Image (cartoon, helix red, strand yellow):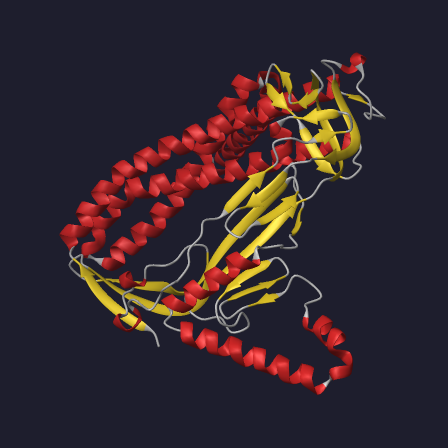
Length: 438
């Protein structure tokens, strides 16, 4: 059932908060302007970096043997990436031969969701009605339910076991006859589920400890004895196939089922029943990045493939599978363009948010008469939106004039000519209309 809470904020408090927001808006506006300018420079530098690397890069058919002629050369090649490193998770005694081993931990908890409705009152005060709802879900961190608003949900969350996320990356990997730099190794992607091989003794100790904390240790022992009795009865009932019976009892995969600890596939589940989770249950998921065939772009330095350094930075790339050099550089350019537009849009939104915060004080002043402030709010939003677009495009244009003046001029000249033509055409129409009127 939803829980609601209504609060009233006085006109004076609203004025004070909106006045403070002016300074936050100024900081946000400046930060967004810097982001827009920096992003254009970053995009240009990365583009030049990619092009410089592409110009210097040569395709190599075979890297199974070290070749002195390739020293200090930027190359593209496809080969097997291998590693002898064993990545481990000492908590459960898990070990794999992989490029990367990742552990993600989730907790089953009550989550508080809120939705608010505000009403401006004559005189400038504001009434806020907040609705709180709660649902069970898997989350990345335990939630402190003592801070929940609904008294009936306070302190409903608990967990008997906590564990941090973990990522282990191989320190050594080879690409044919060459070594890979740590940067390239960490760039390898393409995860798959880990076939777990946990230490059974560790799991049993954890199972007993959780049973003790839950106050169900005797129940756990009783359950184990019942299972043992069932096995004995089954064996006695079928004397002719004892060995086969024992074999059938053993799991065909890595499945382990204790009272509170269960292992299925790449998941260690801590709780009574993973198909019916309870508050406090923990789900630990393991994934790994395996060796395999990869295509690499990088510079050969002392038998190691590293990033290719250019005047605009450094560039290297690794892709799973046999990927042509042209396709890899094309993907790099597309990624650069994508991030450029993401940061542009983010910058424009932040400029708008900063302007709204700065001018919010003047709208709050008018809250004495809600209908008047609503009109001012709509008008202010439109003005801030227009100014945010104009300002953002101006900063982007200035950045292009600095970083790529020739391209910027090629864009601005036709735009300027178009504006001049439209203004001139408008003036000519006005003169014609005036002449007709006379």
